[in-house]
View 1 (cartoon, rainbow, N blue to C red):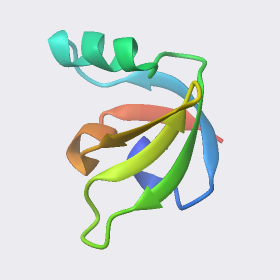
View 2 (spheres, rainbow, N blue to C red):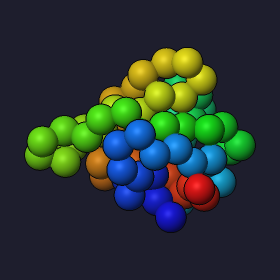
View 3 (cartoon, rainbow, N blue to C red):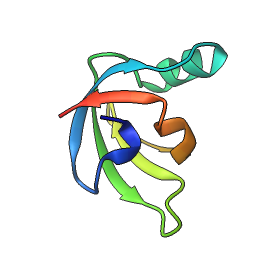
View 4 (tube, helix red, strand yellow):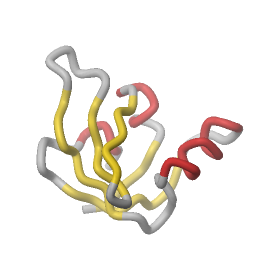
Length: 73
């Protein structure tokens, strides 16, 4: 399952990433790392960005970026 598929108030655990590079280093710095629980707080009316809660912080992520993060419920 992908992070972008979570519905409001649904939580999941990050299991992996598709791709590599500086973008994924930045995600890790924001708290998006393997094994972390993430909650979908709110979706934009237009579908992007999506607000997530991870490690006690709320972070907005573009839908296209959330599609690169794999999660399990």
